[in-house]
Image (cartoon, rainbow, N blue to C red):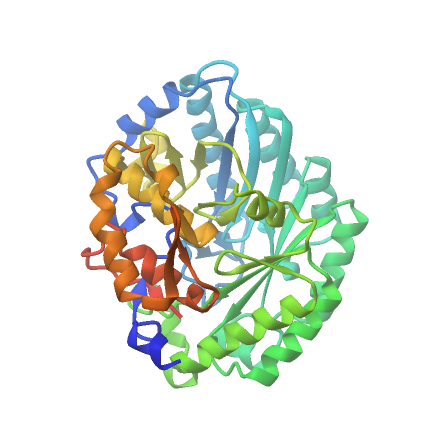
Length: 446
């Protein structure tokens, strides 16, 4: 523990590296024109992934730092979907003929705020714009308190293959402190309905480091998660950034576990999942042995994107809706973040991209190194040498091996993070980040 503290685990704030460079490096000079050029250049023979952002919630959870807004009526949601359909129409006019969709993901916000008719209309519009490829998966983030059999049935009819269920923590005091009341009974009923509808791939999201969270309370939550029997589990560390997410000011700082207690909670959960037969995937996911994400990690095909770890093999991600980020071979583009600004851009007849980043060859090399570390806990120097400027990282390799001592070792052509060093993965990855001097507030490394 002393060495981990010395190396910054309990003090450092670093990117989660769901992209490289992180979104903090995006600029306003890379926008809608870049977005249009990237879309037009797509190869119709290669399927793309599509992400739809639904930024509305009936309740705003205080712990959440996502781009969301509360609503008590469906009127703003209906208006937003009309704009999304206009964005989809622009995509139809821009994309090369024949582009197909390999994966579709709906996130938020709360996608299940949509009633069944809106679910049907949106799904049909998306699939008319980019038809599903022969191999296709469709995942949806689901709030168990805002879903019923009719919504689940419609999602299943529209082809949903995986559901991601928000749990966070089942303890009543923790839930009260984060503004999210969600009973185990409601969550279990949601899971039962999903399985009855034929949705067999289920993900549960848990969060550690929440206010009033203790080892005993987390153990009780884990016991209840066992009864849900998810195929995979995401275990995220709570990022307390009240200067960025104003609603987090409602969470009392004094109720948050300190850094070492937070780290102990993460290790407690990871040990419990391993005892239940789940395999560790990257820094914060766990999967059953036959889960597709587990198989991707085993075969070396695990990747990072803006939803976290993925088994998605599509090289392109097209983001639709306010604040959505697209990932192209040429770089990244983010749609206008505020819903009103997004609506204004689409209404003006232009694509919604308002900031992004055009990748250089050096960026691609660093991105590969960081992705290897985040997914495989090692850098394969042979693979890295596919980049012409791979030697530029020689000093970085040497510094990492020296500074992290026994936590990072070189074995032949691989630089590997040891099991004991895996909690330091994000800190080690930042050494390969050419933008690490950007002033930004990132989440805790622990």
